[in-house]
Length: 177
Image 1 (cartoon, rainbow, N blue to C red):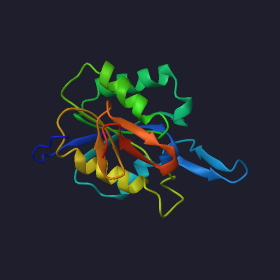
Image 2 (cartoon, rainbow, N blue to C red):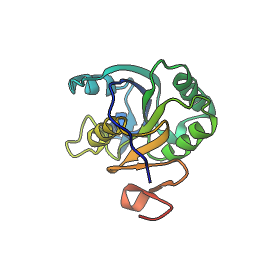
Image 3 (cartoon, helix red, strand yellow):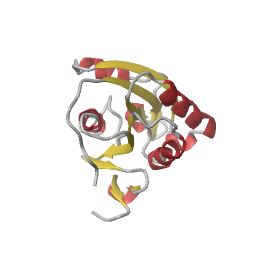
Image 4 (cartoon, rainbow, N blue to C red):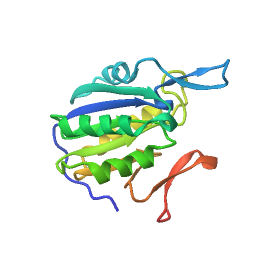
């Protein structure tokens, strides 16, 4: 069970790595392709949040193509961030792996780090889960204890329990519902 704490004012650091959430549909390839540059800053600024925000684009890749070097860059950006509230946008395929990597290697213990993603691109599909997952992640920053989490499908998961269920198009806990 994820423990929550009282809401507080915050500055949020968004770290973008690509993934479906930050992609477009390419009909000639019959698949989504990561944008050249992230649209997350434009999307978040359009929400007119009360929190201060900052953005760092690490790479724009399908998460299956993220390398150890890419993950090290994400880890370094989190470690060096002046913010205690971090949201990492990511691809769904390896988000649980990246959450476990960050949990195992993050030296700072004063941050709330949330990884989120989507099954459909946020920019081209009105029924994309991307906007919901981003909003849910932002909201959960108000209540989570410092640590690494993955927020998807209206639920918060710990890195140790989360898995992607491809045929259901959602994430679940290995501990059961």
